[in-house]
Amino acid sequence: MQKVEFSIRILTFILDSIIIVTLSIMGVNILWDISPLLSQLYFQDYWLYCWIIQLGVALAYHYTAFSLWSASPMQHLKNLTLVTTKGKRPSFIQFSIRLFIKATVVNIPIYMYVYDQDLFFFAGAIYLAILLIGSKMIYEHPRGQLLHGLMSNSYFTYLPEQES
Image (cartoon, rainbow, N blue to C red; front, side, top):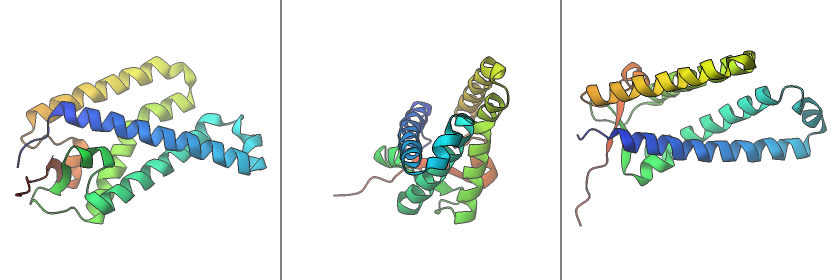
């Protein structure tokens, strides 16, 4: 199986993130419009509510996509699929472990920023470090696995070409 290029992984991550953020903003606005209690609390703890809604949207987005294609919509468009190191579709437990580890790592800087907004530049430095370490792991690992892939024993590969 062919290793997925770093540029494709970054592109799909960015596009999926844009979709998740857009859906999250829509969800926050809808909840704000229909819930008087939320609109009162909304301005007090804005980042906390947005983060909780964003996390819920992201989990639902990835779970639905995994159930359909074993990949996010953008990964599916780029003909990628998630497989185990044995070449099979990951179990729900493996997928959940992968998603939990990824969500934890990606959200650590957000936790820090929500806790103390003075940590904005430090959180940005952590995101940069995650990007640099991730790119090094993808280039050096034979399957291009990141930490969440190593822990869940899974990785992305290109879908096999279908014969016509």
